[in-house]
Length: 287
Ligand code: PEP
Ligand code: MN
Image: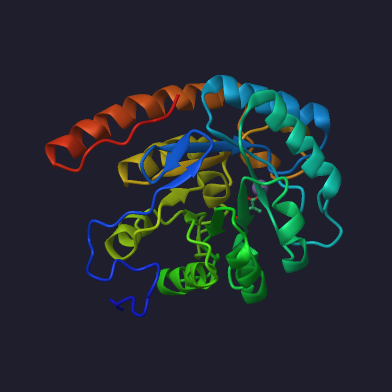
């Protein structure tokens, strides 16, 4: 085991009770259990608005959707860019859900901030230091995905770049790492959740959609994330998965998402019971 060192800002540094709480809309991330849901990419106004309505009705706290898609192939759909952000703005106006959207280029950070409530940094950009520095200057929370080949130490050091710029609001997101397994798209490393909590005060959420890439595995891993002590989950939902342009195999239909939300609530209250008996307080599933 390798100790995680020199985490001046992201580390607990002896203060084991310290916890960062980040308020977005009416959710306190790090205190409440947060559910971020929505399509992989913003494809059209109809698709985003319909999906937003459905996830809102099921109890999601924030809407996700990519307007800039960092794709493996340059020939794949790259996102709608500015047009996508305007669609997200419309969805926020109608549903009231805060927006989580990815920023891929340091030059875009300042203007994407006008649309995003949370700036997502994707797995492929976790170590894009100029992007991290630019997000460090922003006054919007950052959702920093774990690099697909990154250790806990490397991940937290990237969070450190954002914090060092003066942006104190960093949410970590485990999204699966590359292993020899091929049945799932990635290997969701849930052991990282209690590990983060041992060394850092930052909230950590789990993305079982990219972490597994298989619809049938997303629900059990979402529940497992709750049991592991995650501060929330991020789920890809599409109103019509068979037509999703991006990440079709992991797109959850709204009815399934609604069922998952009910199970999450039940499990959250069990976890609250366990935490109370351990003297660790409660964590509410909002709405
Ligand atoms: C996403 O959440 O839209 C995404 C591209 O995820 P990741 O960076 O984890 O692959
Ligand atoms: Mn996706």
